Each structure stands twice: as C-alpha cells, then as structure tokens.
Image 1 (cartoon, rainbow, N blue to C red):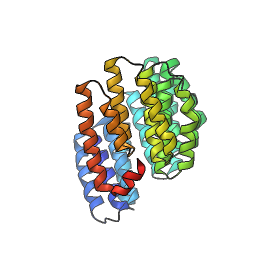
Image 2: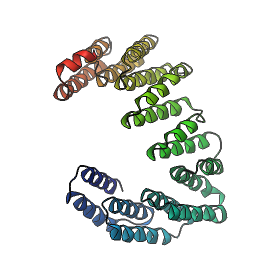
Image 3: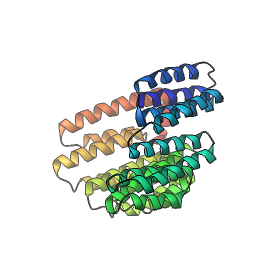
Length: 327
C-alpha cells in the first residue's frame, strides 16, 4: 500500500542518515499494517518489507517477510493476480540481490502466463511481466513480453512502463534505447525529462545535458502549440539546474513567443506555467515579468502569489548573491 511504501522509504532514508533505532520503528509500524491487507497488495507489501529488513541486515526477518509474500501470492485463486503478485515479488528478490531466485520466480510466472491465461487477461499480465523483466535486466525478454501484451497504442503504453522500471533500476542506457521506440510525442518527452532528471541527481550532468539538448529540435515536431510550450519550458527548467543557463533562457523565451500565437485563455494559462518554471529555475525576476504579461487576472494573480511563495522558500535556502547571479 502507499502508506507501507512511505514508511519504508522513510526507514531507508533514516538508515542512510545513520539513525539506529528509527528505521526499525518505521518497519514495525509498516508490518502492523499487513493484517489489513490481502492478495496482491499483501504480497507486494510483505516483499517490500523483506527488502527493508535486508537493507538493515536483519536476514531472519527478511526471510519471514519473503515467505509471507510468497504465501499470499500462492493463495490467490485468480491466475492473473497470482502471476502479477509473483512478478512483483521477483523484483523485490532482485533488490535483495538474490538474482537466482528472482529469475526462477519470474520464469515460473512466464510459464503460467503462457499456459494458463485466457486471451482477455494476457495483456495486463504480460505488461507486468515485461516491466519485471526490464527491472531484472532482461531487455530482449521485456520487449518480447511487451509485444505479447499489446499492439499499437497499448504496446506503446507498455513500453512506457518498461522505461520507467529501467530508470528506477538505474539502467539508464537501456532506458534511453527504449525511449527511442516511443512514438507518442508527449510520452517521449516526459520520459526524456524523467531520465535527464534522474541522471542529474546521479551526478551525470554531462549526459543529462546532452540528452536534453539533442531532443530540443524534436519538440518543434509536436503539432499542438500548447504541448510545444510546456516541453520547451520544462526542458528550460531542467537545463537551468544543469547550469546550461544560456540555453535555458533561450528556451524560455522561445516558449513565451509561442504563447503569443494562442487565444487569450490558452495564452494566459501557458504563460503562467512558464512563469512558475522560471521561478523554480531561480529566475525569479524573469518569472515576475512573465507573470505580469498575463492578461487574465484569474490566472495572473494566483501565479504571482505562487512565485512569491517560491521566492520566500528560495531566500531561506540560497544566499541572495546566488539568486542575483542566477538572474
């Protein structure tokens, strides 16, 4: 469940920060929530807990939680749900560095999917298998399962899930290769931004910058002006974080120029989004100037208020000299 996942994320961060007892407290609370769960949710949560115990060195509790997860999955009567539960457990065994068992469980799930499913269930189950295969590093297998899951637009959606799993697993080169197979412009640029942001946080700023700059020309191929504007602005915001500020400013200007071709309502909304992205990129003065260009008061006033909130937050985090330099 979401609550279990949040508790375990908190435990992980506390452990990384050197806290000794607090991670266990979080995990005990998370474990107490399992009594209210069943089916796929219980299998997922118990497997998540198992990984959390592995990370703090409690292998006995980890085995107990993995066994609980496997028991919950095996007790499911519906074959599709049982397969999905086992694929998620396989991913958690991979997180726990038991790659042999992870691959064995996933292989069994594939056999079940191929031999026991009726056609109406194949799509969602093979989509989950594809995501798990990608997470475990079997990219050819993931693409094959994605093809078994769906065709056309539905196939593209499965690929989005595969790319997301690869980014979460840190397999950025494989993720980038599959992004090139995404045909829908919106999904393509969303994944590029997600991968670039991940690379930024991992410290690979050169590759993140190259990924974004190489895809800027493709934005102009988007048919809708509003979507072009959004992605130019978002690329600009991330490039500012990557210290490519000259290109960032240029993209913000290009995005604003596109809004001048829009109708009044659409123009105001898109200018508001640009202004907020500028503020988040530390261009507070530019953000205010953009916001003041908004014709519709019901858009302009809330945007200016949000910019003021962002500015107050930035002033508590950054020295004024840094903010001035950013402008």
